[in-house]
Length: 243
Image (cartoon, rainbow, N blue to C red):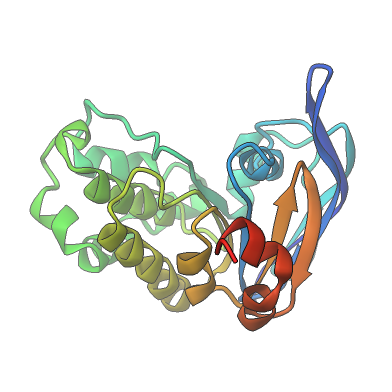
């Protein structure tokens, strides 16, 4: 059974600085939804709110998994991961002095994932042949593109139902960005995931997104019901395409 996310009226702040204001969005079962915005507009904060890393000051965040609805606000990050929600964080956040394989095994700490550890490890090494070649190599010694692949694979090791991906293109060469975005789509289809991807690379994001939202100064400025609607929007043309 597919999973979904619902955010309604979400607000968040760092001290007196308001970062998110009345954010409402939905990620339907099996969708890939892009959260588009330039740096500093609240994309990462929104992702952190979903994961329980930042506590919203208002609003509701709910996930429906296997027909059961869970209110995420107030839950610990560990409990949210335990539901089957995984994050590929901006900057990858690997353990650089551990090997590729050790990083992957650390991704499988929730009970359901531990029960499928061997199966998921075999799948990840098949999906990412470079990681199989370098499973004993220290993560910190790999290239940026390889580290992004490891971050994606580590998230899959938790056997997620909902995958959050925060700025996957950051720090990567254009060819590697395209490869990373393609891999996200491949994994989403193979694992039947529901995906919310925060990204500032508009051109790459809409290649795989079913639809998306544009966030400006912490508010949803536009909701596009398709990649074409996003591409035709004046706000997108102004901020992303220079038109």
